[in-house]
Amino acid sequence: MSRVIVLGSCGAWPEPDRACSGFVVEHEGFRVVLDLGYGTLPRLLSQLGNEAANGLDAVVVSHHHPDHSIDLHGLFRARSMGAGAGAPAISLYAPESVVQQVESLEEEDDAADVRAVFAWHQLPAEPYELGPFRLSSWALPHYVPNAGVRLEAPGLTIAYTGDSGPDPALIELARGADLFIAEASEATKSPGAKGANYLAADEAARVAESAGAQRLLLTHLWPGSDRAEPARVARAIFTGEVLVADEGMVVELG
Image (cartoon, rainbow, N blue to C red; front, side, top):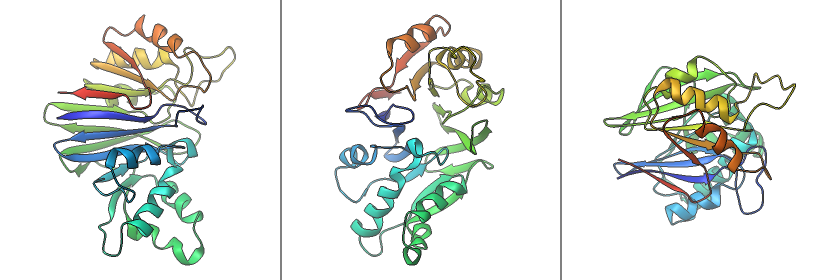
């Protein structure tokens, strides 16, 4: 069984009863989380059924903005304080600034423990073998270093933008994906917006259509916004299925 579970769907900060960016990918008994923004850790621990994140195999964090990364610090504490001595390190794939952010939140004497709890691997980088997946990554335009990621296994491809402005690499990222998880901070760009560092729903839909993706999952939605509007805009462009991320949503894959 393969599936994606939405931990959080908001950009910038979480609106009531929601969380920021976070997704669990489960395939062949392997479990990896994509991003851990505000409010995602309790939802992740609930999915795992324990307070120490036992059963989590790997973490991928696209960039260090806190709406994508801040609950990684909570995960560090769950592992370092709750998992007990001798607990295996969890593989972490992220730009180094993500690791440095977690280290900065600890006392100096404890900061070194971060790289013992997490076995860190640089993103973007050449492809990695990650459990049943091949993990590929692309540097995508944002205000800070951001890695778009693609998880491929036989018969399954999941692509995720993190936060990104328009870029030709997005089409390669999403090429033929069974599920393309894409930022949609707005339905369309606001008048006068520079637009270099984030995607609107119409742009995400054009990428999905050009890439031949099967399904498009819109996420990173602005708190308090009308969530029906990005979906309406995307469905007018993308001929595949358009989904809107919602906390607790389960997307079955294969």
